[in-house]
Image 1 (cartoon, each protein chain N blue to C red):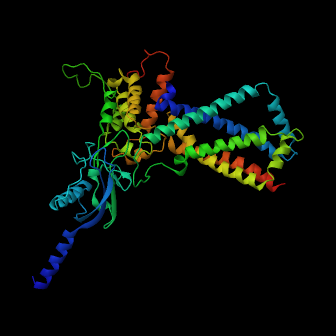
Image 2 (cartoon, rainbow over the protein chains, first blue to last red; image 1 turned 60 degrees about the vertical axis):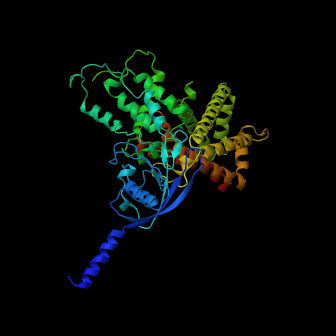
Image 3 (cartoon, rainbow over the protein chains, first blue to last red; image 1 turned 90 degrees about the vertical axis):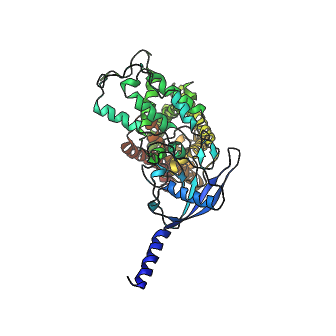
Length: 276
Length: 206
């Protein structure tokens, strides 16, 4: 290889390595009492194949190298199934991808050199712990209020002892796909948790195992939702648009039907679903 | 108790809203009599029939109750929703079904309330001893200000109904969006357009 072409190769390698550059505005807040503010950072040498969280890791390492304090954000599995990560990126929960969590969002979706604003989920029920981390334990308390089934402990049941049609199983699975990340709350203009509650109520409500508590489930989970300070649903369907699991607002219609059925049913003993 | 729960409030809003929708359709069909071109004979006969009907007063009270319940629940829902996010976003974007109509429901609703007050004062509780209701309507709609204000109010009402109709069905548990959306848009154009067209026709045909 001639000296000239060697130099050319070195330049193009350097260009590849130099990667993308972004101006990030990140929400910094020391604790729940701190009013917080947006702080601008430059992220350089970002590979287009990095996930959004990897890009944030890179920026944090850079901050640490400079002796500055890194910013806090949540993540766990980083493969889109745990529901731990969640950032509002340029005003959209989980950013510009469809049906993806923040960890599955790749930097190639962003325009090189653009400005990216990163904020935590905003809701009274999700107080900011620090920087981009919010406390989502309100969701746990909603689950405790009714998102469970009573089962007899002991040996495992026989595989086919409870018959469930394929269609019914699929329907339940569509709702069970909810990972409880809270994007529905973050995107709702009313910070309502209705899609989350509805997914849980439908997931359990369409299966035979969920029948014993079915009558109370919607009511108790909704009461807890209100007590935790979430808002009311006004049917604007922002939640389903950002949901990484693409949970449909038809779940909310199901929850509404459950509520109406509860109101109009005369006998509290009448089963709501007969066996298949 | 029902009306303090999140879905209960929404159900109350949906049911009262649909009843008010029904009222609007009935009112509009009555108003179309103004355009019959018989010098108001049919319209006046219709109005006298209503005024003389023994059930008018009870029905008016029921209608007032429905209207007030709708407003009280709307304010309650809006207040809860405002409290649910004390700190807003620096940047927010809509990627779902939010529209100008859906985000301004409380305002379009409140302007409709003001319109209703003015409207009742102008027609229902006006002193028109020497004139028929038709005569009063025709005289009122010679004013550009009134015709213009009426049209603006109807456009805002149309915006309100645009979101309201399909939203009411979702709240009642019927999730059939594309079809309902089409029906919702058709009905709100019919109602808002129909109401706004009548004063315009009277004004232009004077």
